[in-house]
Image (spheres, rainbow, N blue to C red):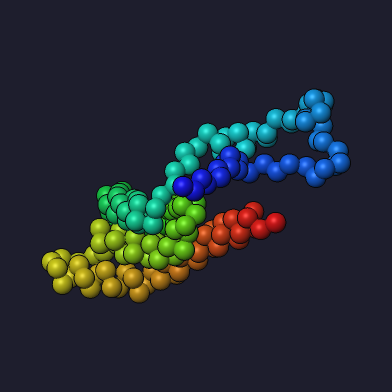
Length: 171
């Protein structure tokens, strides 16, 4: 009968080469404490804000729901002002790109134009189904600048986050 040799599991630590000096902690020496500076007030305030991590689907649902609610709010308060809707669209794009998970960053520029069109349903002028569709297409054509600006903002935030993640991983 064969007996297989078992080894203890490797936990990621390596032994020092024979004759090499041991690190200070292994010799029992204590390091002097590192003086930490308190973070600036802006950093402390930002750390208190929520920091959710949304999946691609969750980010899409979040962005679409917020834009539809903002479209309804715009229709009630500002009388369907497309400029106000476009201005409200930009921070939603940035928040969506910031709150997406690392693996779903590339979905940010895809999500926000769909959400823009979803919110325009509440803002578009027109009576009946065909009038509402004509108002939606007209609003999409005339407000393309806001749409492009929001998509660009979400894409830039996602690209910057992706670059920082890649740099952090590379040695």
